[in-house]
Image 1 (tube, rainbow, N blue to C red):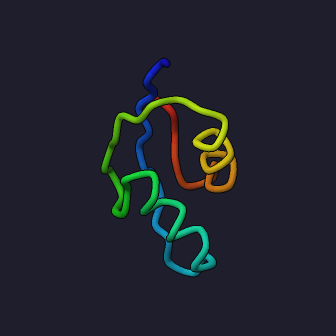
Image 2 (tube, helix red, strand yellow):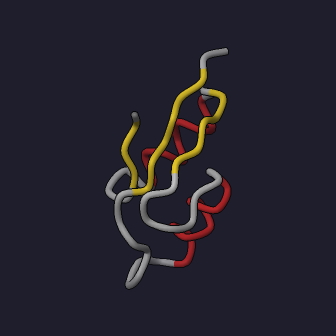
Image 3 (cartoon, one colour):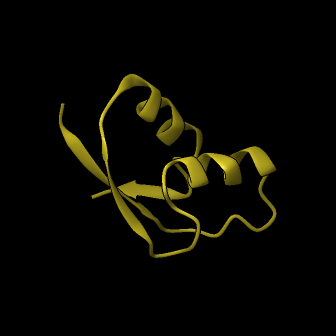
Length: 57
């Protein structure tokens, strides 16, 4: 499968705890951190959930 690089661009302050946990499962947790992960339908769903906090590089 293809790999995608995800970068966190915004803070989780004042966002629901579920979004914080989603970022943790994507391997993120602080602004500016990047992670390269395998692309799959479940990963795409997590990215959609926190699309306002991350960007695909």
